[in-house]
Image 1 (spheres, chains in turn green, purple, orange, blue):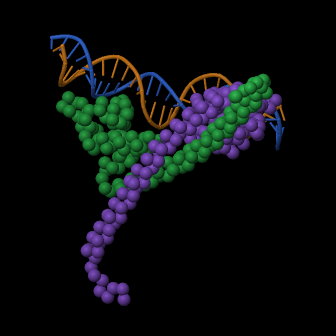
Image 2 (cartoon, helix red, strand yellow):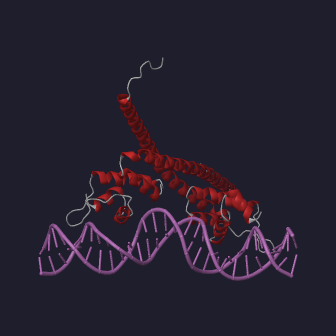
Image 3 (cartoon, chains in turn green, orange, cyan, red):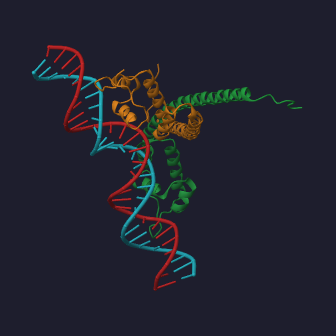
Length: 139
Length: 139
DNA sequence: CCTTGACTTGGAGTTAACTCCAGGTGATAC
DNA sequence: GTATCACCTGGAGTTAACTCCAAGTCAAGG
């Protein structure tokens, strides 16, 4: 699979994909004779993984360390687990902060909604005051 | 309250507090005669609000727009509500992405944990094979 | 009076993560 | 056989959000 298709499928720009490869976040992708990248199944899975991790804001540096350990084979499993656990913990903390903010936003939106309703009620009352009674209205 | 105390209480650097004021994220704080900032109750509440919003990653630009509207009074309530609703929606999307990542991390951590257990079991088996039977062992 | 320490300013520097660009190559379409 | 197109490279530029710095002011302590 060429880079254009990977870009399209995962919504990542070709510049970003090449950048990831350049900095070692994705190991070198196979090339055609003329030097064009040809992503295989494994490359694609790596892209998916990186995309998921990055979408949650995991730092590239930690991910580079992780994929570096993966390349080194089974004796790095413990170290890899520790990285994931650490990042998992940081992520949970950030999510808890975001939940607090979400709650505050909901509260404030609610307050504004009521404020708008109140002002509309007042407006309506004023209109009613000013309106003359309609003789024979509704009948 | 002087800037140092605000820094300490909210874990924000004085550079950041001044930066927020400079870019209009916090309206100008009252000063002593000699020009030193003196945060009052209202200033503090603004700092708290900004801190909460920023901790969830809401962009400074949106927050500047919001606090600008607050300064303009009641006729901006509708517009303010819209900003908060938009940011709330974006936040919810980000949180959902993070939840997916959290789930994947948990899955992978679990896989690694089992892998480690398996390799330990194997190791133990190997050791048992290699160990001589202890004559009269365990009593 | 002099030093110390908290504060002030405008402006420059940093960091992470892209994003863009100029110049070049190779395969395909007309 | 030349135009087009997708791709390649190294390197420079951008963005958001700080963070640091040099030089200056002011109040309090010894």
